[in-house]
Length: 394
Ligand code: HEM
Image 1 (cartoon, protein in one colour):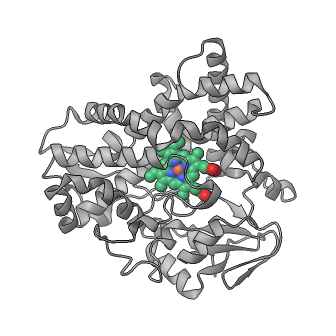
Image 2 (cartoon, helix red, strand yellow):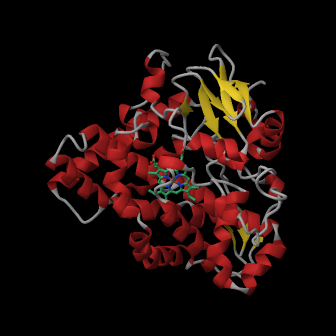
Image 3 (cartoon, rainbow, N blue to C red):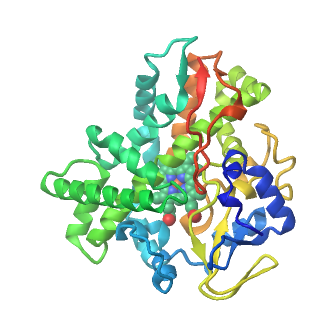
């Protein structure tokens, strides 16, 4: 099958493409063009869940590209993050940051997240037309993760621009240049924290690094901080936009939340299942020939696992293309991944999405789309499914 990801139509509506792939085979061999052979694209739920936790698949991108010169100039800190590494490195790096993201720690951030969200909408009045992405879905998550890490307020806009450039599928020059800008920025910030530590996470990581270089090298420190920054906000921004859009397109489901705000926390799982922000998970590959479902995957083959497709698999979810806040098994979605790389920030993402939905329900009970949904622009990113803009009438 030809590369579906090169077609601009895919970015507008991926679900028919995923359904066609799944129907052909839940683990389909797809040609990405050029001489790169086939890529296994996993769209079935059972197969995706198994692949995400399969130790036979590696996430070590550096090893993959070692004998396949890519001509790329990605900064080494971004070429090998925790999300691009296998145990034991992955285990060591993840252990350094898990404590900062436990549900208990994240609950303590709830009032601050609420205060930030309120500040962002304080100037809005019922009847106004605003872009919900620009006004709320973009600035809230970037501010939260920057505060957690200790990135100064003044640098937030640049940090957001670079991290957004990193997701520009196909535009290698833009991605590589953003990788250097972000890694150089983070190196300089780590040096500044070394001189003048604060209470935030980056200072804590600098202290670990300086205590014991075997636990964390300087490159790993930069790489971990950049990963947290990018993973911690692009996905959440998309989750907020996709959730609000899904509700506005399903007034009968939105009415359930309007009638009972207490249902918001439980609704987040179904919203993430319905339009998953990480549509195709990060890079995996098979160092040795292996089997995924019924499909033989040759040694050296890349594997794209799609949580977005798996979450719409009719073999797993009844009537999967329907948003149903009463769905009993919505929690088994794969929107946060599965296995050892399962999203570290899931509790924080839940708090942020919940906070925004509650605030919008309380302040703007008449919220509506200001443009037909078919005219909305989606980001050109294979990884993240998210809106460029979401014009709404408050
Ligand atoms: C709704 C918002 C979010 C979604 C849908 C999401 C989704 C995901 C997914 C699917 C993965 C696994 C990728 C793979 O296996 O290829 C992942 C990993 C990760 N996420 Fe999230 N994420 C969200 C928010 C966050 C937040 C707020 C943070 C905060 C720091 C975060 C940090 C991470 C990190 C560090 C990893 C890598 C974990 C590892 O390699 O062990 N994410 N996320």
